[in-house]
Amino acid sequence: MNTQIDSRISESLIRVRYAETDAMGIVHHSAYIPWFEVGRSDWMREAGLPYSAFQEMGYYLTVVEIGARYLRPCFYDELVTVRTQIGEVKSRSIRIDYEVINANGVTLVTGFTQHVCITHDGRPTRLPEILERLLNGGE
Amino acid sequence: MNTQIDSRISESLIRVRYAETDAMGIVHHSAYIPWFEVGRSDWMREAGLPYSAFQEMGYYLTVVEIGARYLRPCFYDELVTVRTQIGEVKSRSIRIDYEVINANGVTLVTGFTQHVCITHDGRPTRLPEILERLLNGGE
Amino acid sequence: MNTQIDSRISESLIRVRYAETDAMGIVHHSAYIPWFEVGRSDWMREAGLPYSAFQEMGYYLTVVEIGARYLRPCFYDELVTVRTQIGEVKSRSIRIDYEVINANGVTLVTGFTQHVCITHDGRPTRLPEILERLLNGGE
Amino acid sequence: MNTQIDSRISESLIRVRYAETDAMGIVHHSAYIPWFEVGRSDWMREAGLPYSAFQEMGYYLTVVEIGARYLRPCFYDELVTVRTQIGEVKSRSIRIDYEVINANGVTLVTGFTQHVCITHDGRPTRLPEILERLLNGGE
Image (tube, rainbow over all chains, first blue to last red; front, side, top):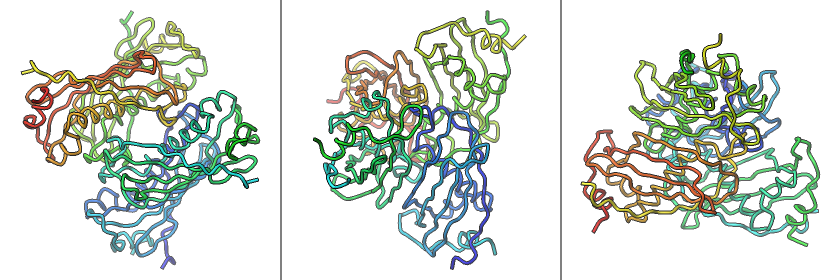
């Protein structure tokens, strides 16, 4: 049931690192993927279940698909925000949506990641109840 | 006209670096994106137009979209192959398709990148004739 | 004259990204090098001369040497601080010193970078007066 | 006893990736550190003890110090060679030396890494005999 997905948007502030730029003088397209990860990490911490704690319970949310659209470039030292929101929750998978905006609120990049829940030995499993409840917006 | 796209597949051999792994013990999902770039770089060099030469002519093939599906994990020191093929050629854009396979020929990851051609001052432009001809399989 | 180096220490807060970990389960040793860069970037911005502005004046502070000592490991999601301080200022070069500490103030990594000033065409040059004054603690 | 260190130099061929460049148009200084890792990985594999096999025996060669000197820049698509050699072997630590040269044999970067041997639970240990013998040139 997707009827009650937590619609909360977390906002992660990121200062562009020089190491993230490339010879075109802009942020390399691969550098946004770890930013998405920062986004969902912050989302979960703010929801009360840090991903590190989730891992310690014996689970991973492994990435099975990603996608990103690059609308405008981004430069060294800019301060950007990653807006992260749960897109879809199924019994065994989650889609998370991202939007990277600059200081003027202009969208630079949008993207998503699709995750399945696995145990530490690599077997797919239902989303544990604690996570499901959280993604569905609490109690 | 897409009628004559060059169907050549280039193969790029990549030895997995320790720095590309993460705390799950596998290659981090973001690390494949530079591998795709290695793939299209090799494709162009083999086609007779290294991307560095294309850049010197005043053009970039900027990335406007990427997508990747992760089917199986990949580990430190594995020898994988990126198979790269032109997916679609339009007057102003190109889609390139990738498949990462392991030493046994098993598919680990598939993906694509969508590019538009821009000049060094950032303006979109038609694919230059030299590139169009090459992508359409020569003469 | 090194007599008046600005002894100010800037502090940069960094949340460890999953992408920065490796298969040992800790932050990969190469990941600290961009953190040092974040450190000096913040130092300069706080001093009133963002490196991006310095670049626009036609200069780079290119890296000619780095060194780092790894005392204790660092983990995903930890909140660490990079403490950055000017180590030495000569007419054509600067050494910057770094210390990465965890939330309890324990030192994890120390390091330095040595820079020379070059113009955009790659020629070494004296530190411009605006930078020299700043590194020497203003007037 | 350092009297018999294996003086063999392994050579690792590396094609510079676009993702490894930065807004100065050259390879970012942090990108060489994973290249050093490629170098020692190849050295060990060629010596008959892949690091992955060493890890499976229950050991890590953790990095406790690195240093690098940057003599000349390196550009996208260049083909460089990392020359790797054992520098010093002590009962509990190893220093490995690196030299990155371009296609004309010109030295671009030199560096070293210092390692101590630890078990998977993080405790320092003597270099296991199999490794010591190998580093001392085996028989």
